[in-house]
Length: 379
Image (cartoon, rainbow, N blue to C red; front, side):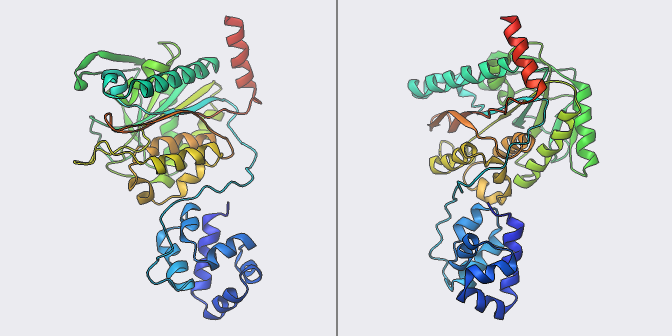
C-alpha cells in the first residue's frame, strides 16, 4: 500500500504543472517515478481510479482531481464509492512486548437484555464467539485490561477521549429494564494516569474522569469476557457524537504503545462497539453488510491500521461511528497483525452488524510466554 501522503503529493504536483501532467498522461509509469509513484499507483492515478485512492486514505478533495481533471470525467461517473482491500505483502508485526491480548467485539445491549428479539441461530453463533474470545483472553493471563467503548448516557466536560481513573467502576443496564445486569470493576488509577500523562505529552486531547458510569458498552462484553472479577480494568471512552477522527483515534492508540512497553505488566486490550449501527431517528435497524465486510476483510488482511487513513465521512456514512474504539486498539497493536473473525451477524431488530474478532499476536515476547506458562501451571 502506498503512503497516502506520497500519493497526495504526487497528485498535487501533477495538478499544478501542466507540462508534467501532459508527459504523465503519455507515459504514466516512467513519469510517475519523477513524483514518487511506482508503476502500479501511477496507473491508478492515470486511470482516474478514485475508489482505490480513497481506499488508500487520500482525501476526497484530492481524489476528485484525478477523476475530473486527469481523466476528464466531469461527472465523476466511473467512481462507485466502494472501497478496496489491497492484498499486498505485510510488514513484520511490531507488537509491544508486554501486550498479551488484543481483540474487539460488539456491545449490543439486546444480546443480554432481550436476546429473543433476534434470530436464535445468530444469537447462538455470537454467544459462541464471545465464549471463544473469553477463552483467548483468559489464556493470555493479563495483569490489566484496557477497554474502549463510546459514551452512551454519561456527559463529560469536553469532546476528548476519556480515561477513567477511579479505583472502581460500577453500573447496570437499568436503562434497558434490566437492573439485574450490573457490573462492578476494579480500576487501575496509577496506570490510567500514566496513560493520561503520555497522551498529553504528545499534545493530544484526553479528559480524566474519576467516575465512569458503566453502561452496556462495557457491561455486555465484560460480563462475558472478564477472566476474573478482580482483574484491573482501565476504561477508555470515546465521544464520537462530539468529535470523530479516525486518524486521531489511531494516533491515540499509538501513544499507548509506550505506556504498555514501560508498564512491566501483561496488558490486554479490548475494543468494543459496532460495526454498522445507526441511532438516527428513522434509521435504527439498518445494517450496511457490504461496508462491514470491507472492514472485516481489512482486519483479516492485516491492514486494520490503514482504516485510520479514511476521512470521517467514509466511516460515518456507513454507520461506523463506533469504529473509533477499534482504531485505538489497532493503533496499539500496529500494522501487520491479521485479525480472525469469530462471528459476524447482521441483526436488524437489535440494530446493527455485530461481530467478534480476535487479533492473534506473535508468540515471541517474554510476557506472552510467561502468560502461557502461568495458565499451564494453574491447570
